[in-house]
Image: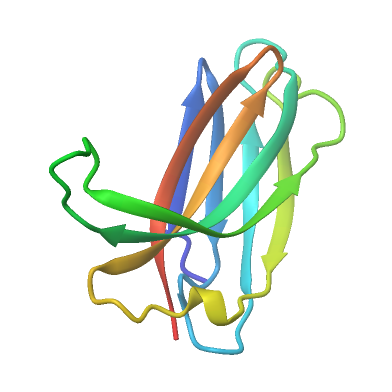
Length: 135
């Protein structure tokens, strides 16, 4: 397992969330596996949940838009953490997502990304993403 190939990292205050995917270059029939590491900061933190999203992003310039990509949601998975994250505590949460035909890329201007979204109590959401390949 090469942990440096795919790493999505989110910082919120002194807390840190790392998403590590075991194999970011998947062949058809393989499963997306990984682990989310939550490192507590200087104080306790209440996390609602962590969401993993697989998104197909297609580069598409349009004059009427401020964005150069169209995002097409492919799948998402919510991960509940047991309890709050205490100061200096580390928690790990393994995940597994089974791809399907929606993950296939037919357009040369498209790519797949895995986005990690941290939902914190009282409405704060922070996110980070990195690219994967499938097929």
